[in-house]
Each structure stands twice: as structure tokens, then as C-alpha cells.
Image 1 (spheres, rainbow, N blue to C red):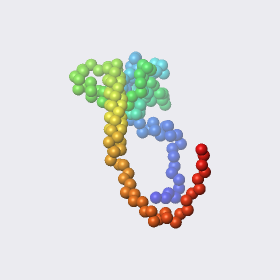
Image 2: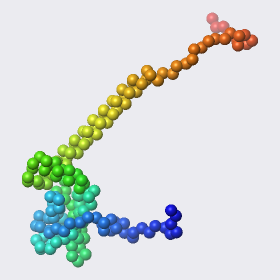
Image 3: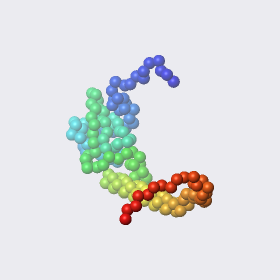
Image 4: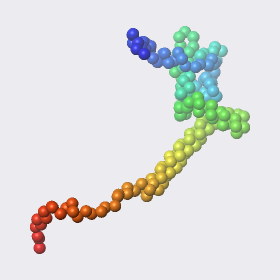
Length: 177
């Protein structure tokens, strides 16, 4: 389909993305913002702590390591995990970790448990990928080895016909002794 005019792109692609991110309303506590059982903190939140005013917390499901905090008076700030050593995680990984903890019967879930479960799941996934890769490569190697004998080229039987070469002159040979 041809357009009579070019597709118009947003003026600010980053703001365009932020406008479509999901959000939750949260209070800023003395120890930061809590979202999905994870704690976020930055010094810019200090004036908001303990005010009893809700702020809008936008998050990217592909990366929960940082959130956008929107408060009154056009206050917008990016806030990271309170513990900056924590790895980036996705909302999907977080949900799988919470489901695994619930399946184990864990009642009191904290940040350390969530991140250790995610690390364990990542290790299991990496091991499975490596095992799968090793198994696949071994199977391919065995298949190649077994099929090498089957796929030999068979040439037709050669029957010399002397009458074809009777009229050719013999080649001159130089003798070295």
C-alpha cells in the first residue's frame, strides 16, 4: 500500500515510549518506592518521602531495574533499584520467580529471595541450553558419521574398449637412467 505522504514520526521517541508504559500509583516511603516486592530509591525522592501523596510509577516490563517516577508539578525522575548491585530483570522473570516461590510454599518473600530464585532460573536455563546444544551437536555428529557410509558415490563398471584407442600414436618418452 503506497502512502500519499510519509509516515509521521513522534517528535520525542523517548517520551512517546514513556506515554505507553504501564504504571502503578505508589506512596514514597522513608525507604523508597516498593513495586512488585522490589525497592527503588534515589536521593531525589527524599522530599517526597512520608508525605502521604501518591506518585505515578511507570515501569518497562522488559527492564525492572529502573522506573520513572512522576509526581506533582511536572516532577519526573528515573529511579533505580535501591541496591545497585542487583541485575536487570524482566517482569516475566519476576513473575516466574514468584510462581516458583509460591509453588515451594514460601510465605515471606523478600528481595533477596526473588533475585536468588531468578539467578537459579537463569542458571537452569543456561545449563539446559548448553545441554541441548551438546545433545544436538552430538546427534548431528553421529548422523554424519553414520550417513558417511551410506552416501558413497558408486561409479559404473568400467569396461575398456581397445578399438577406440587403436589409431592413436604412441607418446615419446624421455629416458633418465
